[in-house]
Length: 141
Image (tube, rainbow, N blue to C red; front, side, top):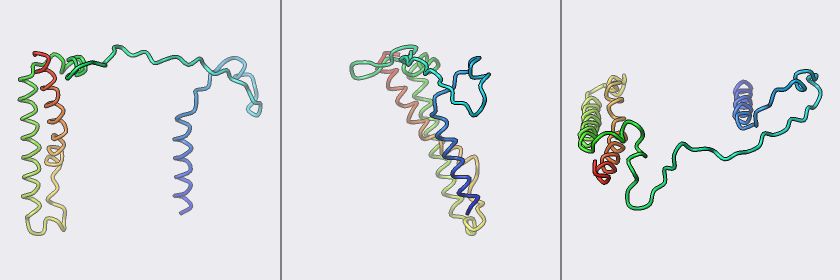
């Protein structure tokens, strides 16, 4: 229990230090001793500079929100890709269900196959490509 509490404490300190402002190294801080308190000036805060504005007005966004690859794909390719990913997900879930019903498969875990687990993750990708297809179709591609 003591090791677990120590682990939790170290994890919390590490997580909290991720949000601490970065220290600026200068000649003054390099020459001071470890016990001395050094006042470090905070860097000026500036707004984040985005590459492009991704906001839009209207029913559908422009194609640029899909990124550099999908924005150049026609909607027919995205539609076929979406159907393929959905079929892969459905096939993987169905085959996993058949393996689940084999007698004794639950006891030893033999019904879990990595390729069916991987195939079952294609559902969210199918939804994403479906939305990308809709965006491209609305934009006339």
